[in-house]
Length: 327
Image (cartoon, rainbow, N blue to C red; front, side, top):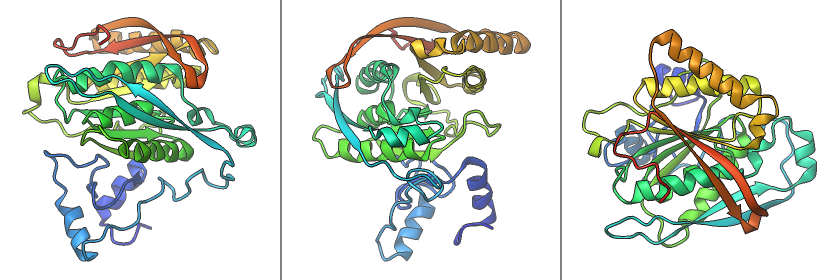
């Protein structure tokens, strides 16, 4: 049974990708991506007119339940603010203050099978700090598309959208999607946020559903990649690590630039080794060699008690004009 008011084609897309969490007046019915200057959503404009110019209430998440089907909502969350430097020469942009929301309800953590997206992890901060200057100083166009897999609290997605990117944050957890949307809503209230856009959507990266990449265009600004795909702290299980490797290969094969953040959680089940082995096997089977670069960072954040968190950032298929030096 398809949702009321949707065509057969639209219903098929929703079944394949999961229902996107978006405000109907701002996102195309046929694409989970937020609208920008290139992709006008005429269908959604018509729908808004039919509603007398008023937007319908935002869909709360992919399945209609903000904290997961059958799960009790958490009783305690906390908001934390992180300052991200943009340093966009020649006209420097002011720092961006990003809000992230975590679940600190210990009872909620105890009854959930996969609660890890309800907290912020150090690699996310390292990736956000790397991306922000590149989105702000013209090395990537202002409307660069960014797709985050396993967004969790959404720090990377929110920071990228705050720097003007068109962002699609995805996760398998309805709770994580709710946290990411709340963080974006709060961040937009602060002065200095640019006119980026962010949508949140259910997506299982271990499934066989293709990545929800944006359409390829011949007029990309300044040789920017089709999309920047990011993932952070997702190698903590061996089977998940193998799935991430397949997604990396899929994205790069379609012209994307993949940024993967990792920390010591990948040592639990040998996730880092399984990831490298699976990716190498895919390269050998297809006769290709993906260009890659690796950097190591030390992340500190007083609000989260991080005095010296070591993370690794892996850049796969980076554009030649992108400097991989921090800042």
